[in-house]
Image 1: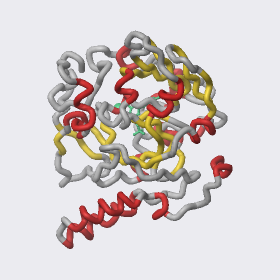
Image 2 (image 1 turned 180 degrees about the horizontal axis):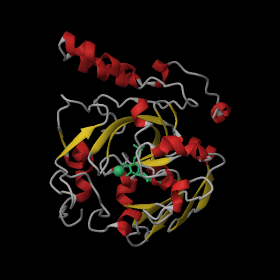
Image 3 (image 1 turned 90 degrees about the vertical axis):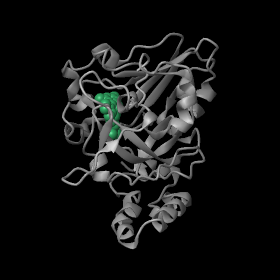
Image 4 (image 1 turned 180 degrees about the vertical axis):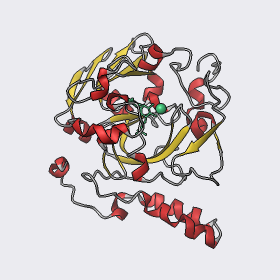
Length: 324
Ligand SMILES: Nc1nc2c(c(=O)[nH]1)N[C@H]1C(S)=C(S)[C@@H](COP(=O)(O)O)O[C@H]1N2
Ligand SMILES: [Mo]
């Protein structure tokens, strides 16, 4: 997995990978804590240091508003072992165990539909398309658990601007890999394959919508969606497709795999919303992975997963109970 050597990356020191801004912000945060609590919080400082498992992929400081949440990052061990990636099985532990068969290179992404400059981009081209940034996002699964992950990537808008959507482009559909030879889960009928997702064009253009190539300063582990995936932090996790192979610009709202599976349960928008319950369970609270145990407090779910200031305007005047 040392395929990034050609970019001249050597094993950088953690302090070079983690933007100074995070250190400064964490320092301010730590200063606000009592000495004892600060000691307990110390491991958080090491969280975004490289785990040293895969090829390094450093990201620079992001200037995007909301790109750096101050919550303690989930451990790499948890983030890479508790996954939803149904192409490799439906148990949380299946992807880590089974995704070694995924071949993240060579890899291309086809961009087609309502764009003036369609084309097929290979991974190296995409990696160089815009400066890579580190962004610490909350990711909230519709099942009720959440993580905090330092991703490496750039705004999807960078790619969208280059392909020049036509006036007819109102939505973007994301198609992910479906290859039976690499993905044992495809023989099950839990979802329609390939796994497809979609966003409205303005959601796709929002600077927080991330095209991610790495996490924790390294390339993405297979189970987290190597070699590239989407991360839309204000929506339920299933909107963030893994291992994307095609991006299609379309005029009408595209089909998504989860809507096809259960339209009443998984809407097109799927914005994190504590006031709109899933038909089978409440969304009012959530559980942070790594915080389970006897004394773990229940966390209230935040409107738009805590990104309301940044994205609320996208939904001004919309009935969010109807457009769930
Ligand atoms: N291709 C594909 N992408 C997917 C999924 C999937 O099953 N297949 N699961 C989604 C769900 S339900 C969640 S919560 C997130 C989980 O991302 P993580 O494992 O990196 O935390 O990926 C999303 N992307
Ligand atoms: Mo999910």
